[in-house]
Image (cartoon, rainbow, N blue to C red; front, side, top):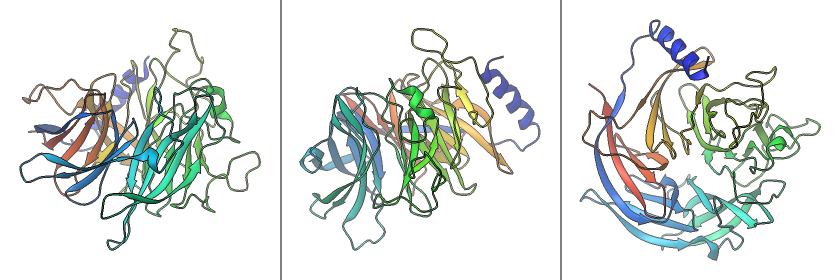
Length: 381
């Protein structure tokens, strides 16, 4: 039986035991910005201003306007302050995270990106300041994933700040190095945990463990491009690209092994079997699995709904979540934009950001003619 069928059967059983939970729907779409060059990550600075990245190497500062659109305030070439940024295929400038604590300071940002050259590259994180003149200064590289690798695929690249102010950096297996995702001495196919200066927190799960990188948080991942924190449940969730099939939603806990490539519900791009196993001792199965692949490129939580931008499926998929004890369950899956609305939707969706004060989301549409669209969301009737 396919795992999707098992999940669906469980969801039906679970839904009989818990109160029905309302679904969300998009009720209005407003194009904010167009003709963007592969927008990748986004972060609000306040209720109006936000920053987003273009994978080609530009950090864009923009603001929402009273006329229900947005205007670009500045376009900053990041290579002027990060000279070794590597842009090719999947490589480039990735996520941006606002970590500012004091409003009187310059804005403190983290940027993730591919660094190096085709024959030796890695995922890096820089800390920088955005001045009131909308320039970057005091830029410092605080993290480099080890080891370097060849090629331009599977970098991960999402950033998440936890309540203790530490940072999770999602990483990929480098595509041609998938067996290394089971090797704890390196960071290929893992999630790393650092502080905002790049140092290793002294309570990381592998501190003091022989043959393990001290900044390793979890491992056995293929290419993690979505990560979010559920404050009420004190839970970290992530989305991960599988090969042909086997895209995953995972409940991330420090020190755990998430199985890749020994566990997967997908097959290789040639159709060949990667592994005969669907569970193994000491390895975490996914909370949810997509086969065929939807290519989940991010993850945003809206109350108890996971909103997942999908590149291949060209949609925003929504998962209704429930928690019982330490267990998180997926109750059902549906499309945020449905046939019941008048919104036409056929976009490769790269990322989603919640508006800080409104019931709306900013949606990054992938591609060299990319867009940012604001979607108002509400409970479905």
